[in-house]
Every structure is written in C-alpha cells, then in structure tokens.
Amino acid sequence: MTPIFLASKGGLLGPIASLLGIIMDGIFRVMSSFGIVNIGVCIIIFTIVTRILMMPLSYKQAKSQKIMAMIQPQVALIQQKYKGKENDQNAMMMQNAEIKAVYERYGTSMTGGCLQLVIQFPIILALYRVIQFVPTYVSGVRIYFDTIIEKIGGAAAVSAVNDFAHSSETLTRILSTARITDQTITSTDQIMDFLYYLNPSQWQSFIEYIRTNGLAAENVISQAITPNMNAIIDMNNFLGINLASSPSSYGLASIQAWIIPLLAGLSQFLATKMMSKTTQSATSADASAAQMMNTMNYTMPLISIFFCFSISSGVGIYWIASSVIMGVTQYLLNRHMQKVNADDIIKKNLEKANKKRAKKGLPPINEKTQEDNIRKMQLKLEKEEAKRQAQLEATKSHMEDSNSYYKTGSIAERARMVQQYNEKHDKNRKK
Image 1 (cartoon, rainbow, N blue to C red):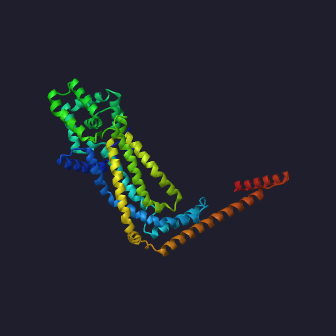
Image 2: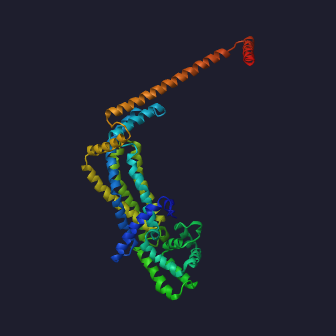
Image 3: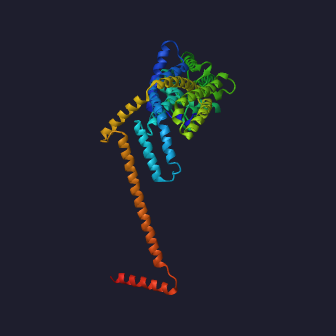
C-alpha cells in the first residue's frame, strides 16, 4: 500500500514535484545519450543533485545548531529558575520573556532553527512522489508508455486495460498502489500509472491479453508494443530488482529485494547517528530533548525498514542513496563547523536582526534594550497582579457585607428584613 504522503500527484506539492521531475528528466536524457537507460542509476544521480541543491539549507541548519549549543545551557538555567511555577501564568510569561531575550542576544529566535526543516519537508515529500511515479514526471520515460497506449488505441485502451486490471486480485491491488481512485481506470494517464507497476511476468500477461482480445495487430505487437515493453522492463531493472515492485511482493524469491529495506534501515541509522553528533551538544542541557533524540536514533531506521518493504523498490534505492549522501555531507559539515567561529555567526545574525528591527522602527538589540523589555514585562505583570488583588479584595468585602446584612438569628429579625425589603420595593415602584 502506498503511504498517504505519496498518494496524490496534485495539491500543494504538485509544482515542486513538477520542477524536480524536470531535473530527473534532464538526468535521464543525459544518461541515455551515454547509453545508460536505467532508472535506478538516474535515481542515485538525482539524489546527489537534489542534496547538493539543498546544501544551503543544510548549512544554515548546521550554523543554527552551533548557536543552539551555546544557547541551551542558558535556557536550562532560566527554566531551573522557574521550576515548580508551571501553574503560575505570570511566572511562565516572565520565563518566556527571559528565554526570548537570550535568543535575541544571539541574533536568532526560538523558532529560527525550525525554518530550514519546514522548507526542506515539502521538498523531500515531492522527491518521493517523483520517484514513486516516474512516468508522470519524467517525459523521457513517459514516451515509452505513451507509445504502447497509442498503439492499443485511445478509448479502447482505457476499457481494455481497465478490464485487464480487474482480471485478478493481484492486478487489482496495483490500482491502489498507483493511487487510482474507485479502482477504475478512466484516462490514459491512469493507464500509464497502472502499467508502470507491472512486473516482467505481468507485462507478459498484458501482451498476451492484447493478443488474445485482438486489441492490436500481430505486427504492431511485435514491432512496437513488445519492444517498448522490453525497454521499460530493462530501464526498471536495477541489479536484478524491478524498481516499480515492492520488496514485499517478491516474498522470499529475491534476496536482493529484501536487502533494500535492510540497507535503508542501516544507512538511516548511520546517518541519524552522524546527525545526532551535531545536535548532541545543543540538547545536552535538555534531558527530555536528549532522550527524544536517542529514541529517534532507533525508531527512524525501523520506520525506514517498514516503509521500504511496502513501497516500490525505487523509493528504497532513493532512501539508501539519500541517507548515505546525507551522512557524508553531515560529516563534512561537522568538520567545517568546527573551524567556524561562533562569534562571527552571532555578529552576522545580529546585523540581520537589527536591520529588520530598524525597518519596524525598533531600537537595535543590546543588553539595555533587553533589560528594558524584561523590566516592562515585570511592571506590566505587577500592575495586572495588583488589579487582580484589588478585585479580589472588593469581592471579599462585598461578600462580607452581604453575609452581615442577611445574617439573622430570630424569626422577628427575618420578618423585619422582609418588611424593609417590601417598603423599599414599594417606594421604588411609586417613583
């Protein structure tokens, strides 16, 4: 079954996936010009290219982590200062104000380190989509499918392939993998999506189905359909594995297919360990964050293994290549960041932050402005607390007066109270 984040080719990720598809198509055409017509090789090169394109974001993330390593100990001290006051709203507001001041002192914000991850997330999802549905986004590959569909013939092809897809339970399951809604093929694009997930034996069954049902002349089958089918099978073959098929579909018949998810888990584990070295110093002061990072070191590889068993082997190849490249680039970034002076990063961050503040008419960040801001926050909270206490005192006094007024010890006193109320009520009514 296709994971939900790969289930649609439209939506917000569509434009990003289309752009990445152009890159993938360029790689496919260049490699084809050298006689290498293989999607697996293209996926690996595609992974390298996209990782290089995302290097600026990775570099910014590394700089952010270096600054976070300096900020976290100070944040931990502030949190310790307000420990036990979690239910005190004013104390929590003061804690946040002091933590914010620490981040501003380093020219960053509490959410600054998350920005690069937020930007990368849709790009990574779009990458998966391109690799999951190669013919949709790579026109150089699509040509082979379009030729087969054209030879079968327009509307007739839609009906024929739809009938073929429902001829067995195994083929019908492919409709779900190819994210075809309602299990019904209604367009030539959906034919292409369905055909992409056929393994070699299923392709042969499809050719036989065309021949048996007279959907194409024998010479068309032999001269056009079969050669394109063979080209598709060959380009999807990577080290004996059909990239469109999931490892789970092979059962125990292919050791190579089972190696893919295992290598995906191993490479993910090594890459995560490499990345954890970068974040370890930044989270060492926060026990819960450190524990979460340690948990992720083991859960992420297991998730990789699970998904790579159930999705196409092409995505598994990308997963392995991506983890390996990510580990190498992280190692190089770690070595580079050891030579980078943190003071230089802070200086540039402050310059950038002060330019933004100047446009808003705010004073530059310095110790005095931060102390003033905290003092203003303290005064504001004190005024609010004084107002709240005054309201409580007024309410308490009113309650005491009411209790005193209505407190009675005898029936006569209660009768007088009722009489006074009625007399007052009658006077008000006459007015």
